Amino acid sequence: MVIVSDTSPISNLFLINKLGLLHKFYGRIIIPNAVMTELLVLKEQGIDLSEIENAHWIEVAIVSNTEAVRRYLAEVDLGEAEAIALAKELHATRLLMDEERGRDLAVREGLHIIGIIGILIQAKHSREISSVKQLMDELIQKARFFIDVNLYNHALELANEK
Figure 1 (cartoon, rainbow, N blue to C red):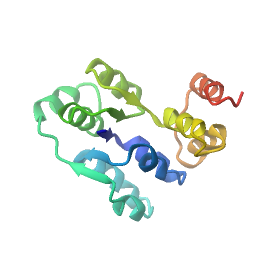
Figure 2 (cartoon, helix red, strand yellow; figure 1 turned 60 degrees about the horizontal axis):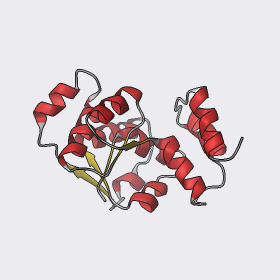
Figure 3 (cartoon, rainbow, N blue to C red; figure 1 turned 90 degrees about the vertical axis):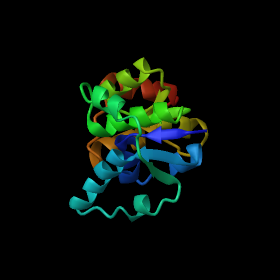
């Protein structure tokens, strides 16, 4: 199984102390250089990133197809563009991505995606967490993660919490 991630799933799960869910479900996660650069910005905010930096299961890879990255930059930011290009290069089983424009582009490019809310629902069904609602609320409060009200309610239904 090859899993590539954009910045959001890693940074936001880290901010609510649930980064380990990614390792539990996917084992090794591969990220492009641009995603690591985006993650390191958190250091400038005084956040200790040693958990991410020391995670042996998070691997940084270089994207070969720079032309694809340039094309994708017309629609998404550099981290997303590199994550999509890397996922295609590696024939990834799944791409972890939250941003709507990036997800739309990834789907058009034939990739299978899951976002942080899907990961939380998966964690609830496998009994790794007890409450999707509690963690979504933490994402909103601690990580300032935006969750559309319809997605929030749908996630509660899928997690059998509504």
